[in-house]
Image 1 (tube, rainbow, N blue to C red):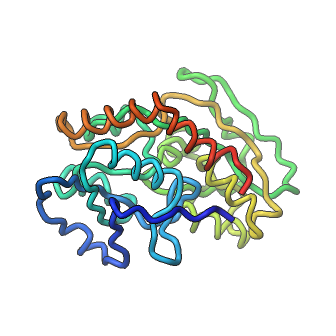
Image 2 (image 1 turned 45 degrees about the vertical axis):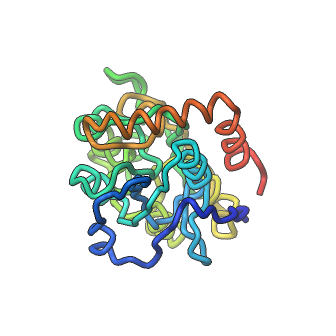
Length: 270
């Protein structure tokens, strides 16, 4: 079980908002910066626990980041896919949600420095004997769709994994889900053969009771579609917010705090 994070008074999570209410965020007041998060669980990055507290790697990191910035981070919730639209509409100042830094997303938002490098994998039944292979492509090595013939894969819509499947696996039977947790639920129900997603939440799933019969079946080769790591996103041209976030991230990297958080959430048995 993941350890609980002590609630930080700097971050006030507004739990139970309807999506519409979450999007109707007031103009930022002096001394605060508006942050958008998704309540959809994506551990070890983030989740809202049963006590209504935000926890996970990105919760710890953002708590520390807000302290470094010296502003109150006022949080509102939206669906994961609604975060970028809320940001570009000026309803929030920055967003967090394991967002991979990709060229496509850079067209509509600006990204902070990367604070984590993610790995994409296919997770499926341990007993599955399929030999998943890669092939050469103009952008490097990619999963060979022929090795997945007859299989059904799932992924979270709006993610780099969705973009990857649409580009490299267009002829494979695939299903998009609103969250990784719902895709994994269909995997355990036998409606999917594999889920294409980040390794870190997969490891959380594999350590759970539900994940006991499953394993990582293939590590997807990194390429441009899968991005340049994970970062915070701000509105295009919002240099003030970006400078504050990058300055805080740099300080957290230099004093060892970021490495300690990575070790806590990704390399410590919980």
